[in-house]
Length: 58
Image 1 (cartoon, helix red, strand yellow):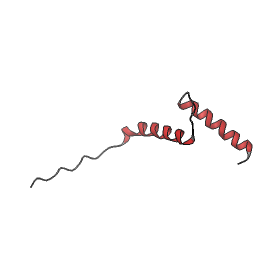
Image 2 (tube, helix red, strand yellow; image 1 turned 90 degrees about the vertical axis):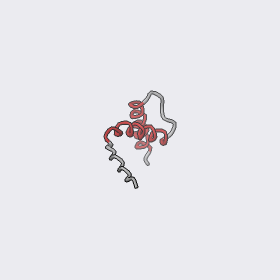
Image 3 (cartoon, helix red, strand yellow; image 1 turned 180 degrees about the horizontal axis):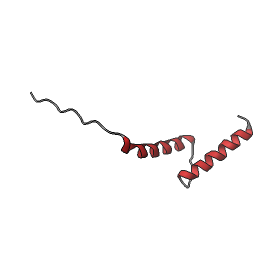
Image 4 (cartoon, rainbow, N blue to C red; image 1 turned 30 degrees about the horizontal axis):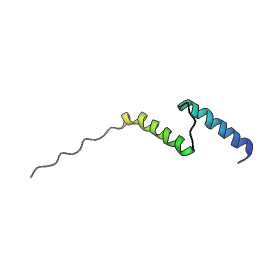
């Protein structure tokens, strides 16, 4: 990746990181885990779980 583009990506990552927490992420993996946890928390109420079928007694 050209140096200017890499610098722009790093600046964008840093700006985006500040939107989600004060301290910087230590790695891309930390960032992704944090963002997916937020996504799961946000979308959990949208998941409608079907009731379990009742077991027939013998």
